[in-house]
Amino acid sequence: MSDKEQKISRREQILQALAQMLENNPGQRITTAALAREVGVSEAALYRHFPSKARMFEGLIGFIEETLFSRITLITQSDVGGVRQCEQILTLLLAFVEKNPGMARILTGDALSGETERLRVRINQLFERLETQLKQIMREAEVREGLRTEIPAGSAANLMLAAAEGRIRQFVRSEFKRRPTEFWPEQWARLGTGLYRAPVASA
Image (tube, rainbow, N blue to C red; front, top):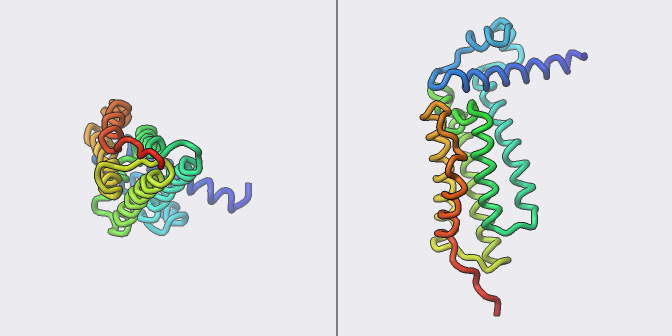
């Protein structure tokens, strides 16, 4: 294994350990000393791979962004209708955090308390990007499918995402006992039905 491959491997190991500690220690702040013990290296060794703990969190946020948005691109490029695309995106988000509880703490900001402001800004931008994507889908669905929302598309997108964010926050608050996907199918059925009007017939 080359030095570069070893460095990448160690970086990934550090990030995986951080994510695992966030999951195993709900509500607790992770120190670099504790993380170094978990990885089995010195704190100095951690800083050879990441100049700061903030950079470690940025690595995890990057993983969240890449995982979610690469799949969202596939969803938006598919042939399914707009309502179904919105459902798939929100279900993807909930299933991702359910599988990765440590990431849920990052998305709610719970794990970022006391950390640098730019991390919280980046999470805010991630959710803004999700909301913009949902709004775009609804606007395109109106043009292509004659689907219109009962309230403006921006307001509808905000409501959809707020429902999903609430599920994630409950997951973190319950210390990962209350699954985000629990009740979601029937909740989405009610939410989706309430947000959309019947399709407009073409002339």
